[in-house]
Image 1 (cartoon, rainbow, N blue to C red):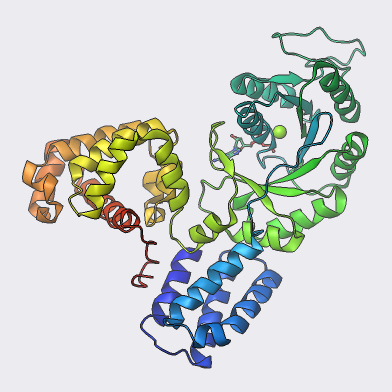
Image 2: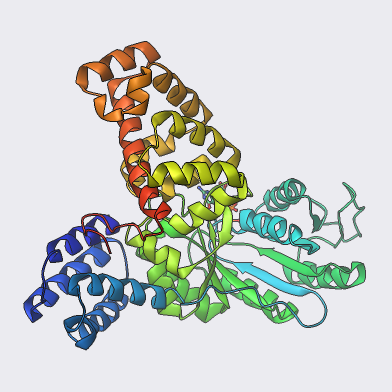
Length: 457
Ligand code: GDP
Ligand code: MG
């Protein structure tokens, strides 16, 4: 795992006052291996490590108070740079509807993304129109119709199964119309419709294939030419690994795109594909998709992704989401407890109950440092987990809740029995609590959390 490898590498630098060229080379070699193992493309790795090496041997490191931490900073900076630097925003059209076209392989998450994007835009007072220009798969139009309904936005689609050449009848109250069959025509008709009805963003879902395919590429390119979109988003599954580069290059050559959307970031992938695609195409990543529900979606922040790769956890996102949901007084109280080390398992429980409000718990846990070790639990995570957590904490004595250090082996066995869980589950909960408390304590004190094993920054 990329993060593990990098933190291991940095651990080896720890405590070194001055770095010799050999130290730097050793570190760079480790970074190189870690990146390759994480499916980052070879060219990207070479380029990246070259830059890091050059800077690490330079003045900024030899003059730094803590050279090894300066190296970490450099790695972080270079990661951010590759990922596009500043967060990219949608470029809206100056006049008329903004047209966003989605392209990518089948299963990449385009249709889901169309719904997420539409819902997100609608939440910002836009009036998006979804366009079903995937007429390849029999189910595609129906799928987008369902997504549009969930997102509460309008859809323009040829009536399912209508190949009669007659104009279809609108249904569901927000159904545009077009004669079936030709995706280019559907897209053009949709544009006309959007202008008429004053939709201000048009999101065009297109067909994908399982692999790169000349006919598909031509279709996407024809749609692009016909509607001249303001944005073309290349949608790519972050789990696809080494294939990411070839796929991205093929789409760049065949259709070209203005930005990349990474999907399935809720999975195991920790940045390999992101680094490769952004670097090889020179196109920034604009959004990240982190789950199947329409709310599992957020703008992409290169600095946060870099931290995630370095396993700092996506603390900023966490805090942002927390602020949305916690009332201020409550979070002040918690922050105070964190800072003074008086945060207890009882507080943890009430915090978890708060988290329930925050939507996807799984995505949240995935952002916590150390959570990657809990893959299995994350995969099985559901609301019942909170119920079990509750049971575990309630099986503890008051003293144990307040001073988790008391929890030795025999107490854990007793608690597991009392709560109908296993010792493993009790251990996992206590570990999670420890990690959360440690991290939050640093944040609450206004500090930057440590890179694991590095000591304070
Ligand atoms: P398309 O063929 O590109 O239109 O892909 P779809 O939108 O139909 O998505 C393919 C599958 O991936 C569906 O089962 C989606 O629910 C799932 N999916 C899409 N985005 C995500 C994501 O961010 N995370 C996860 N876990 N699944 C996703
Ligand atoms: Mg689709």
